[in-house]
Length: 491
Image (cartoon, rainbow, N blue to C red; front, top):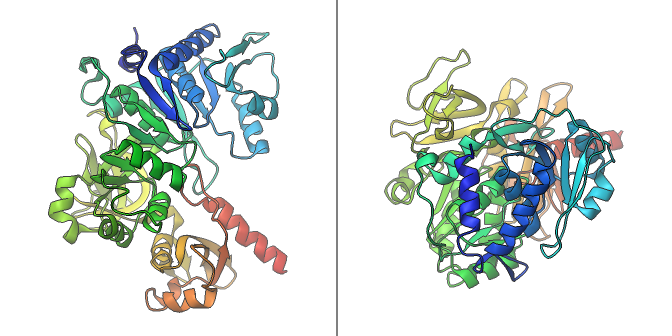
């Protein structure tokens, strides 16, 4: 039986073939062209097995969107492969997966895919050229992942990315709401145009594309977040809501854009990484737009908490810094180290039951330290597994990062622990400036009035750009390797 998500994709793609579907690089692709390409992908994938696992080297381009939709139409599993992680790592990742089907552009296939007789290859490119199948020579024993729509990479903030099952049911609930099987089929396309600037290799990009499809909404697809292209799309299409990760929001905040440029926007949603209340307030003061932060994780298949406009208007002054309240159908609780639930405002480890998993789901453990106040607002206090113990004192990297980012010259910061023979660990920081002119001594002096002595980094390095994951979070593994290499070099 066809899953409601697969059926919704097919229904929307066929609603109005001549209408505009995706704007990319200032040119529009019609729903009919997108549908035709997705059907071609679906047909090729179906030749390779019943609901197979299909690795797609995803980039933010229309043919890649069509490939994603085509595999989901066929009931297969999209195995997300990030072609931008570095050739050696991506090549090793693909080889270890032993997939029956790989989809990608010709350059990526030539560079990253080692030919295997048990792997079929589908080459994609421009939507005007049909995808090409190079069939496998032998049968692949891959059993597939029944019920799984996307085998999604986590962002890999603290270590190597791992894969998480996002089921058809989870994604359908996220983008169609309620009971997807009873969700009414759209009868016409939406007039408003959305902007998708999250990468397809991140759950945020997949979610936003599928949400647009489920709502029958055309969208602008940005290959990456670029301030000028994003602002151009906002001015042209005048969306009422946009989504910005904290790094992108800070770029907009400190740009030359005006209230007039963003006059259509009624709210900005922001997630994937912590955003300081000071930055949210500064954005609202400059543009007159409330910032609605949220809390989500790849494992949840979407968000579990967030601010609404109504809550923002009523509670922001007293609750600033919170990530909002539980989404409809989601449950949150805070427990101690033994798993015993704690009361209001008591800090501990957060556990969640996402609405996407249904009412009978088990509690999901997180490594986030949190508290929930008497009004149900959730406060994320930091990652328990990232706490730095400096001579017996606990340092939360997010506190140090937020203090650094409150300096007007700092565009972004990342904080990690570095081993220390005497103290166990000390915090060290990598900083990205808006413009040159600020030095380490000035930053240290600034921190002395905002942090305890034990929280002040023992080393700060200023770089042109902090290494980041596809979701825009600092790549803490790369940051840590920088400081290890720096210490080895000093010896």
